[in-house]
Image (cartoon, rainbow, N blue to C red; front, side):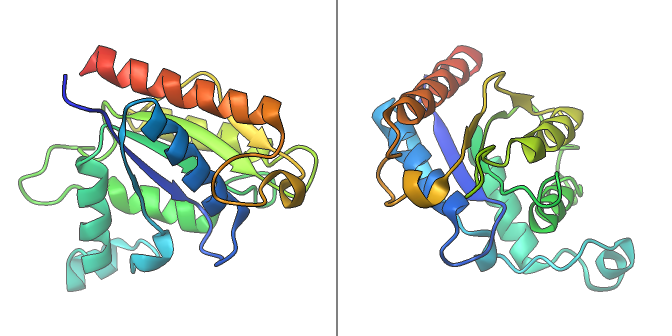
Amino acid sequence: MNTPKILAFAGSTRKESFNKRLAKIALLAADKAGAETTFIDLHDYDMPLYSEDLLAEHGMPEGVIAFKEMLKNHNGFLITSPEYNGSLTGTLKNAIDWGTVKADGEERMACWNGKIAGLLSASPGGLGGIRGLHHLRTILAGIGTFVLPNHLAVGNSTTNLQNDEQITDEKLQLQLESLTHEMVRVIRGLH
C-alpha cells in the first residue's frame, strides 16, 4: 500500500483560529503515524456562496477547482470545525457543497465518496464545540464519506492549544494520537 495521504483543514478562516492550530497538531500526529500530510487554509480558496445560477453563468470557480483537486488527491481528511450556533460554520458547509458539484468527466461525489474523515473541534468553552461535529458527521456520511466513530473536542482552547505542536492536556493529546493512528490504519486497510 502506498503511504496514506491525509489532508487537514479547518472550518474557520480566522487568522488565529484554534481550529487551524488543532488541524496542524493533528497532522503532526498523522505524520508520526506514517501518513503523508497536507494542511490547507480555506481562506486561500475563493469559493463564493454556492449557486447553480453562478455555476451556469460563470462555470466552476478556480478556487473550487483547486479545492476539489486537493480533496481528490487525498485518501482522508482531518476536519476541524468550530461550532457556530450549535452547528458547523457556513464556510465549511459551503466548501462541502462545492465539493459535491460534479465537473465534466468526473465521477459523482469524486471528492468525498470512499474517503475517510476524522472530525475534531476546538472551543474556548468547556464542551469544545462538540455539538457542531454531529451535524458535520451527518453531512459527510450522506455524501459517501466514512467518518471515524471517535471524534475529538478540545475545550478550554486558550489553555489547551498554545502552539501548533501538541495539546497541553496530555489525555487529549493521547486521544488525538489514537484518532490519527486509527485513520492511518483504516486507510491502509481499505486502500
